[in-house]
Length: 485
Ligand code: ATP
Ligand code: MG
Image 1 (spheres, rainbow, N blue to C red):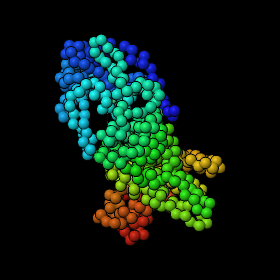
Image 2: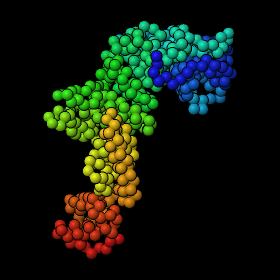
Image 3: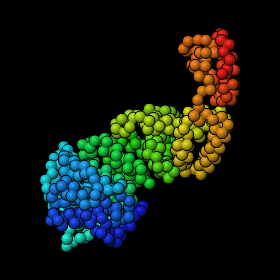
Image 4: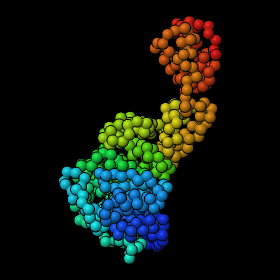
């Protein structure tokens, strides 16, 4: 039985489709040119289950490019963009992306997912699709106008929430291994089940993922992460053997070792719970990635310390250092987004650790200073990370979390260190002591910053100025007599 299926199929959702302007224009052009034409693929699937869809594909048994021009003209739409290499043409109709392609047959060569293509019939075209639910077509031809063309039981599978390939799955997946990741992605997005025969073929062909580019892999992975409950996809990725091909570090999280009767939690499932928890609170892809990676270094930092038990000392720092390596391999962006993920991984223990003793203002100020504008994201991650099965422990952590949240609010209102700008600049210091740029300036700035964070002085220019003069004196500098501006 499908788990978590969110959609129901209703064929009545296709009622009246052929009188909608786009479909009517395609049908009229098909009749005029006497060329069979069909709406096909994801759009048909999504419409039947009432899921929003931003792109629509049409297949014609003929020249898709010329056909696209004619339809665009009928609709007063355009310009039409032609992709000769792919034999496709597209135009925008308001915010709907409309694509046309000639029906084709494909034959594959073992070392590439780029097939040889030749003109074919609608049936040939449906056979080369990845899943039966993605092979559904609507006829736009005289005599069968508006009829569903479903040679592989796609509508039944859509109703059952089943992902199954139209042909022998071993051939479908070996031809284009990306389809295996798409299977997991659709299962996660739609809450569908991968048919056992199809799933076993994925397990047999998982190694074929090696011919797929990192960009295509991360595109599917990101779609899984952006689904409402990505854990579903991660479990399928692991069980299918696909994860081993591109994300071995995550696989390492699995398992709960025991020594002298003392175990630790299975960090694979723990991480997935944290990820699902974050997803309930935020749509942000990179915050979700931070959840994926927050404990990634637990396996490499794990130790059993007699008398203490399992420890993962330094996993947050080591984990932060692993982020760029993983992002680079998956060809994910290495700029701001990566730095954000890295920062959250590095800081993820701080909010709760802060409560080990009493929650002091200065510790809270330090946290605000280090997290800056990412403090809200960090607190979402931190809250999501409280998953202990031990109710007492969980209650204590939750109380601590609330305490930190309250303190964060109070301290930020009072001290505004979230976007800390030093109240005294290097320029100020040079002018005050009449000195050229040198190391002393940095030293004085650090003393002022620490004094503010530690609550010795307030985040205030006059107080900071006084402190600067005192520090300068200690360092043997002479004030230039320049007044505080
Ligand atoms: P989404 O738009 O949500 O990513 P989709 O199913 O519409 O899902 P597209 O990439 O837009 O996916 O592709 C449109 C259609 O093209 C699919 O429904 C499917 O019929 C076919 N298709 C896409 N990629 C493949 C593939 N790798 N192998 C076989 N058929 C594919
Ligand atoms: Mg689509």
